[in-house]
Image (cartoon, rainbow over all chains, first blue to last red; front, side, top):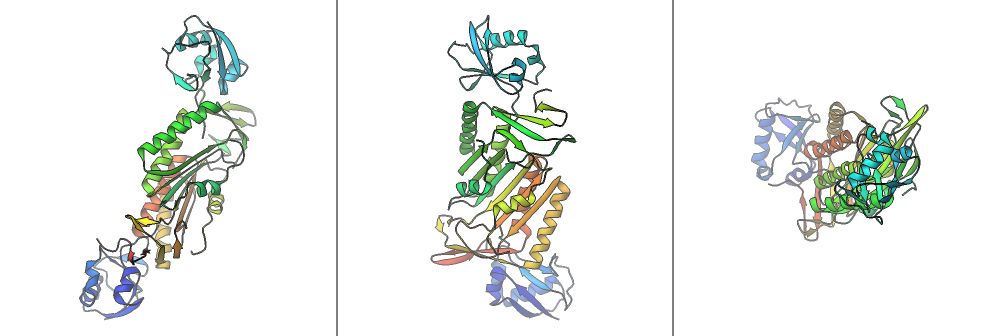
Length: 79
Length: 79
Length: 132
Length: 132
């Protein structure tokens, strides 16, 4: 499955742009993370990162749909 | 000994003015309180009250001098 | 002590280039106490002693937390509903200290500073906290 | 989200006739981090999600404390030293709830709201909190 991923903060720097298309094997958040970490090993050096689906934080088991809005959320630092 | 006493808040209402002259038997804060409570029993109905001498709270044992600035401090309620 | 308190001016005064967090407490005159309508408040202070007690509290706050600047203003006289009797503003490098120091100052001010508040109702008036 | 934040306007907005205490937290851009001079900060947000997360925190605060009004403003974009990225203002009948709710909101905002801050130094830049 092909997923469009939005990227913010340091994730945007790592991916080299504000969004990217990712080909994933397992159609879950965990599957997306595995694909991304293979292509972008710098992701693993982050303190942590989360995945948001349709503006909500999503757990590893979450099953992705091609129409979902998916975003990579590196450690937040607002305020 | 004769002491001049400043009064604030409800103490001013109880004494009927912003200051008064009190004749005391024992020249301590405790002695002053005894004299005042005898003349103005409403003082005893207060939640509490303190005596300040020269702008500092003073304990019952504090020995008064005729030149001291003495004030009756009913329960404070600033803020 | 008795002109209107300008919040913005207080914040400008405490802010420094080293500040990361500012906490501001603003006391306002409420329109009711225990369900009874308040028309106005009348504040009275033993001014010389009040200033001394406030200075002690401020010194104590500077000892306990890494405070950069700290400001306390308290009005006296007649205040209407919505007016501001007290402002406390605290700047620190980090927010925890700012919150804690600000709360410390207002909590202690209400306990030890010789200032008195009279609530005026339609049918009478009460010195707050005077009686048990 | 990106015009200058007016503290006075925020306070006016939260103040009600029932308010007795207002707590305001103001985040400001510090001139240094760990002894290193900061030239400016750049804030970025995943706006739609950030607004949703802020709304959750605010709803949570209203559930936990008797809050009258609560306001959160956060800027994005480039901010210079001394500018205000965030203001939180909370009005309550009594001060304890105002302090606690205000601190709850800023603490949670910093943990869950998708906003990111880049510190720009003379010799480089860092996304805050990105690396362990």
